[in-house]
Length: 269
Image (cartoon, rainbow, N blue to C red):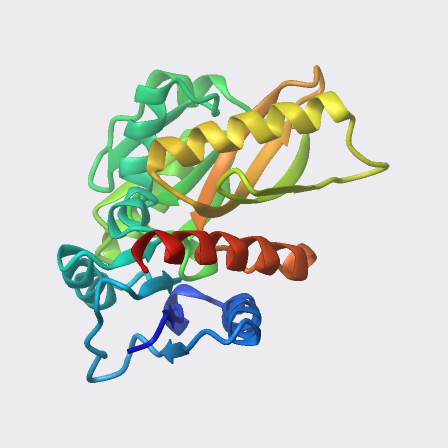
């Protein structure tokens, strides 16, 4: 019976990033194997999944419903899964929006909308731009997240989504400023990738606090995302994802994830 099982992300949920997403998981697996742990790698498209005991810890990047149902089965048997199935599903934008609102997270004005709607919220007419994002999973193709500048364009994008069978979108107010990417592992690791000449320490602290609050609201342990720092220095959360590729900081992140996984393994050994 393996000590750890690492589950890859399905290619359709890694558009243009399949190799990068696999790399972080393989890096973590390599670090755990160096410690003499038995680590199995699972392709979520496999016809058969292994049987596990409660002493196995699963590190999963999978996002497809078939894989989530299998992971949920393991969870019901008492297997520790990182991130949990509930947390992964909480990353669907419709759920994310509601949970962030409940937690008081700071993010741009946003509205969940059915794609067959013709009436738009009043704030759309008072903004310099709107991001239209599919309301379920994260972007699987470039058209899943679109920037538009006026009401008619919003309605046209809604029709496009509806025609593709996507039932809901999130409209998010555009915020001008400096975009930042961040990467976290529970309370063990946090890294912000700054734009321009660097990042003021106070802004970095704001981003870290904001990101961890948002991740906690969704139940995420391994996460990454995007935020905007506006002209006044205010930070606004834009997106949060489960298991990013950690491409700019892969080795340090892998070491933090492996250390966290070993800690969780000790609890079930």
